[in-house]
Image (cartoon, rainbow over all chains, first blue to last red; front, top):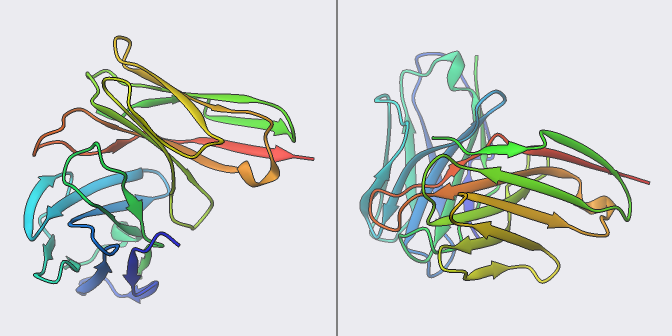
Length: 114
Length: 112
């Protein structure tokens, strides 16, 4: 158990809908990362927050947005869902914001869009 | 840009050794290694930093050649539990704009 908690673990929704994935980082970690993993793409970096502020952005679609709250939990919002958005979404956390820190992954949220 | 891992897949008998390589076209600040079993979270194995610092598990060893922008993960005396997909993640900068970019993975299967 990495200490990173993600909910829900599984989610099935229809195209065009909107979902929110939630993440609680490890105790003491200020940085939160979101990654998408689909069968043919591997682990794709979406976005990073550190202590409430956006720190780095990857290939995150405009339909997706994220935020980190004062209590450091984070939410990833996915809207106007398409079949291709079906994937495993991982949240990860680390103490600091730079890449010298160990990054720990949560168990992921399986999203299926039908 | 995504780092390239080799080999793409390898099958070992229990007790054999393996080396997994990770190569980047960009100057690297850090290399992170993870093992993932199907449908589960990637598990941290090791981080290697520019300058030689390493953090990770005692039974895992790895190298980082900064000049060649390459890293290798050494798995010795493999066990069945080593099976999974190994990913390297590379970071090209320590600053704000840095992000971890993962390779496509190396599938390792250890058999009896």
